[in-house]
Length: 195
Length: 168
Image 1 (cartoon, each protein chain N blue to C red):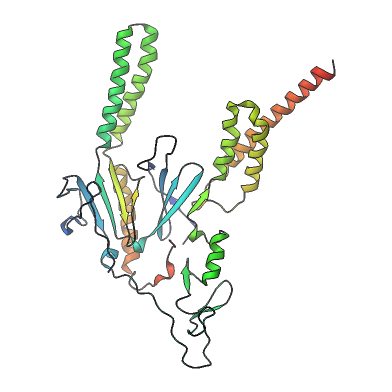
Image 2 (image 1 turned 60 degrees about the horizontal axis):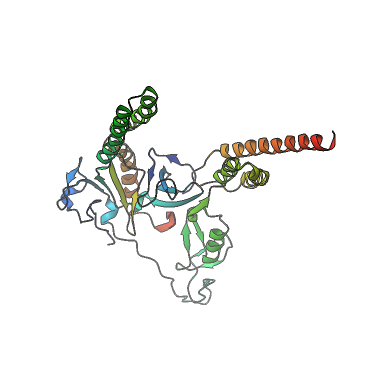
């Protein structure tokens, strides 16, 4: 069994079982703070036991790619290597070998393993808006914002999907800033050289 | 595992973050077989997944945040009103009356949103605070939506093996 104690959110003391799954709040026996605990069957469920690789008994049995003395139980869905139970990494409904799992993680192909992501849409938008306070910076930041918006427009999306609106706003604002600069340059050019 | 997500109502700031500068906002998304906790500082998001079949408990603790916020908002409103009375000038009344009205409105909104709480989720390996569940009324609604999903996932949890694991 691998059950964590159900603790009061205020004093972190363990709550008695009489508190579990009550309809309303009950005062914590230690700190008197009203608390409600919903406890699910998983709390009393034993942790599933891991399966170890089985030894090869006859020479005609296929062995694991990583442990040649262990019997192959499954093949990797990405590279096709035979794997024993120990090397079978089951994730997101796929069976992968440790190498493919690592490749999938580093290349960001396995969404189920992704634990963080940069918000390129917010960065592009900030790059289009914040430098307006220091107008001269927009000469550099406006093209940079357009570059980031276009570069990451179709990048693997945020895990909960989000609209591309911020990218679009960033591009429009940056184009306006660049247009402003171009008009400014033309005006200066005519003012100085075409007098 | 991944795919369609439904955004759950509520947005909260993680404890320990400084307003505006290092704030980490927390939101919850409902997946097909798991709950996704998204923490964001605006430029980077971190994800934590809680498979329904692994959730051991959800604990909600009532907090005094609403009373504290009321005291702060009404205190500031009173301060501006007193300053307005002391200045006793039409321009002063407008300049100091507006922030006073703003704080009274904030206090009203705070009152209408109902009592506050702190929620945490426990699995076999971790306990995590769900900062977006910070109002009891809203939390109860979300829990009434989550509870059947968790119970359903755990009803046949004994038959399943570790295949459908959502990752770390």
